[in-house]
Length: 405
Ligand SMILES: Cc1ncc(COP(=O)(O)O)c(C=O)c1O
Picture 1 (cartoon, protein in one colour):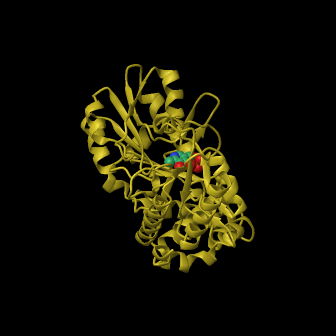
Picture 2 (picture 1 turned 90 degrees about the vertical axis):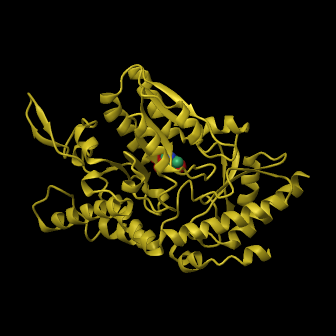
Picture 3 (picture 1 turned 60 degrees about the horizontal axis):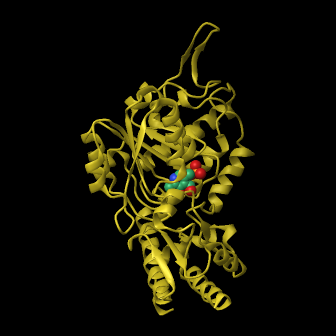
């Protein structure tokens, strides 16, 4: 344990007490959803209580104030990822954001014979929306292979890309392997053939500084609940000129300019893509989460998680009965298999020990097929994770080994 206790975990020491949900619980499933700090819960309680009113419509002061708070949350998200406010569309999450792009930009720009490049490690939410589009339009989907250590193989992508490719859609950070894409190179490769680049940033925004301008991508999506914010909200960022040219997808209130029975004209982005009363309380919660993560500091969070990953991988290797997946420099996520034990059995025994890991296909069945396993065990860290969580996990694995011996 000496290596583990040597970790300087100032980030978790500073933050753990902010999370009511973590008492006596070793939560290693942050890649599925992050625990929420008290400031986020408080902000949402205020927004839904003392401050509550609708947005964009009310002529009374409370509604005007709530509109300001709601739009301030959008401004925070924009600043957090380096975009403009008008380029941030609130969605229910990353899944809805990708479906939005597929059904609006994809449906109106792609036709039979056009191609989309995905990768083997994509989450189902960056596969199925494109398959639905394929079924409607006849576009073709190509799949970029991985390098041996589980990175999207950009040399292979370069060789595969042709002028028929109109979109490259890759995970910025893999939710299974923790591998981080060289997003700027992916953008260069996509743009060299005239394709757009969509980045699935679900696992990147909680741990890496994201600057969409520097990455030079065209679409960026993420979910708030993985960023220590609430469920039910996320964001799509797209370049202003792309958003402006995209037709609406959901019709209703708030997304219109003028409605008559003969003809409706639409609002400018982002409102064009936000039909109906929005997730007001959740947006405020997302804004609070952005403030919280920014105050802790992404470089500190990333360094903290990198140290935890290095320690866990080293300790798991010592057990001699573990297969480790993914690259050594994984971003906060360690997938592994324990010889002779199904990940679900491991997860169940660990739960008895107060340790929560994820066991399953992680919504990445094509990646499981590629790895040749039905499932993996996945320990994923957050800013509150610490050496005690690793120690508890290792104790639980030892106990599992004894049970199965
Ligand atoms: C890489 C990645 N993409 C997409 C998603 C989907 O996110 P959500 O279910 O919040 O829409 C997840 C969630 O696990 C993810 O990890």
